Amino acid sequence: MTAILRRSAPGAILGEGPLWSKRDQCVYWVDILSHNLHAYYLSGESKTWHFPEPIGWVIEREKGGFIAGLMSGFAEVTLDPLTIKHIATPYPHEPENRLNDAKADDLGRIWAGSMHKPIEKISGAFYRLNTDLSWQEVDGPYKIANGPTFSADHARVYHTDTGKSEIYVFDVIDGELANKTLWLTFPEDWGGPDGMTTDAQGGIWIAHWGPGRVTRFNPDATVDFSIDLPAKQITSLCFAGDNLNRVFVTSAAENLPEDREGGTLFEIPAPLLRGHTGLEPQKFGG
Image 1 (cartoon, rainbow, N blue to C red):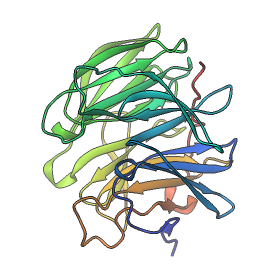
Image 2 (image 1 turned 45 degrees about the horizontal axis):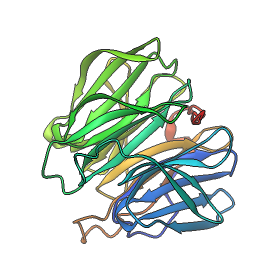
Image 3 (image 1 turned 90 degrees about the horizontal axis):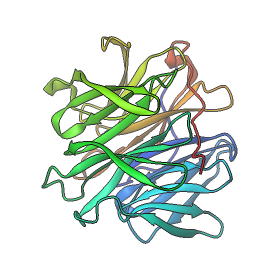
Image 4 (image 1 turned 135 degrees about the vertical axis):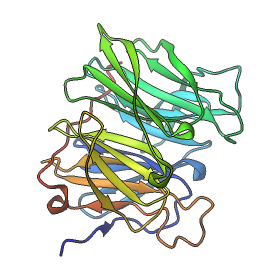
């Protein structure tokens, strides 16, 4: 029987943001509250970089290096040696907010959500970072902005408010958002919808915070199938590998010390994916 694989030790407080890098042959992922960026190389090696503040995600740049989502906002980042250059704080009026989750689109732009770090206010929003390093707020407010993920043809983008258990879908028309629609509401026993990714066959994969699983949904929001994980607080996932037929899943140990596998980076091997494969992640074009 094919088993879930463990690719890190448990204990990441808030593991998040997995990103497949074909260039570096690794999965990058973060522990937001420990301020760490991790890399799991397909060779089996691992590496960690410590940041001076919470880090929600990294996205590769076409010209090399990364854009990172930090508590202070968007930043240019290089590794080895670690360098950080601030770009912009999209919420100067909300100093307790932080960036939480993001994806790049087929035009090379980054779409990112934010949230109140203590989760005491509904002060988050959805932003777009353009290739000239300007930015716009495109939707809000959100309690816990999560996702996002694009349809395979980039004609739609899905975005989540975990705090409301709601997932929305927008049309993307001439690069702009339109026609916001409530796509799916998670019932209480599903936990909270967290990070998402899209497969090449059009399915939407969503991490469940609470009941410890990921689910593949059809484009009409019906359930296709679910895969149980050994940790309860599952946060996000990405397809990886040269054939994009492996799925890496992040989890969190936050506020759940009895969950012995919380905070582990897991791998769901190809046989459990029922033939589904991923899409190569887009890079930031600026």
